[in-house]
Length: 203
View 1 (cartoon, rainbow, N blue to C red):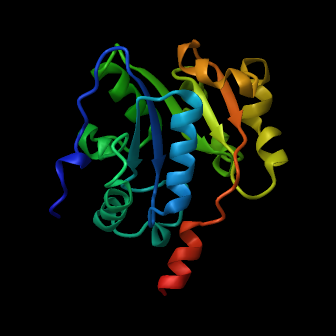
View 2 (cartoon, one colour; view 1 turned 120 degrees about the horizontal axis):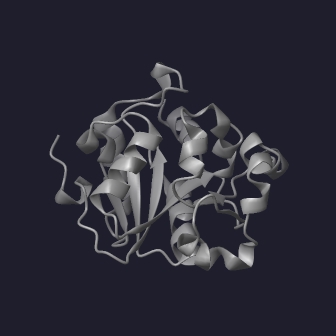
View 3 (cartoon, rainbow, N blue to C red; view 1 turned 90 degrees about the vertical axis):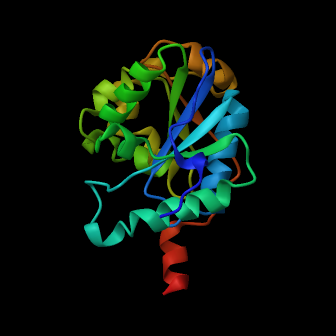
């Protein structure tokens, strides 16, 4: 695949505040951009790195889609957004699980403040991720509102276990300066697009 330099591991500078936005992106769409831009503005991020997963162990393999096509869709939709960058970190680090990827970023750029970005729909299942508690205690987490039942996300195992680490929404801009565990739930106008719906249209 002929990917642009934008898809490589980006050079980051000490003192930057960077959001890590992982997903299958099958395909990447305007809803993803909406979440990433909401996070960038509300959290005061210098960059948002889109981490295209080679495969999600919690999803059916048939739903993964071709990795090269998913990277291409993410590159296309972020092409005109200079602070939204596609990063093939899991391929570069040789990792499969989110904790290992995060450890790779922290080790490579110790002077950068990272924030993990996760949609509220995924927060409901976060406790099924491998080493999820270590993720929560490694970097601050921003939970981004998604269509569906927001109560389920706020009553998730993660939300209950780390209830005392939750910041009020008006303190979101300072999230990256907090020591983990620390998290915030960001409400925002919904974008109803989903990758599942788009795959249905394409079919």
